[in-house]
Length: 249
Image (cartoon, rainbow, N blue to C red; front, side, top):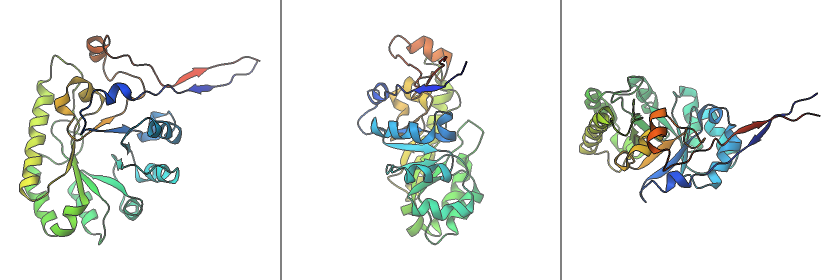
């Protein structure tokens, strides 16, 4: 008796695209080997199904997508080691900057890659606090002509966007994020890509969509929380994109 494992992909991005306004971009989160679904296989399918960009864990994953022929925007969500920054720049891969150390590493480069500032508005995992922004702006202003071009976006991550009926904490995070955007704009950093919502925030309300949404688990056909499945399951049908089959001989 032998066993064979077969995969079946049923990816459908339409249910997300239909939720978004015309200006909001859909970025597929494919970090960590597309959560076990296969980085290149899943990303190529997502690319064909109309996503606008990709979020990966590392520059290494981003380089794999570029080598596979994917030309759409790519953003790394994990930390980037300094030796990887030139490759990110050369292959047009934007990096996340969540700390002063990471910011200074980018600033040391004569020709840095594009980057997005990460704000910690309540997840308490990584990112700049609102109180840090004056120092962030001060550091960037020293090379404003160069950095204003390379600072492409600013983002945060919602800690508890999983219940339609209890958005209080998420709304608080959004309000603090908007303060951060206003401070950056006042300092001269305009036209930044603003993004806050993962799958949960994307499903809960359009007010969280902004310029882009980072959808991971929803694109794999899974709910981010049981609460959302109970509340929205009649309107939205999610089917796992990956299935396993065994065969006997």
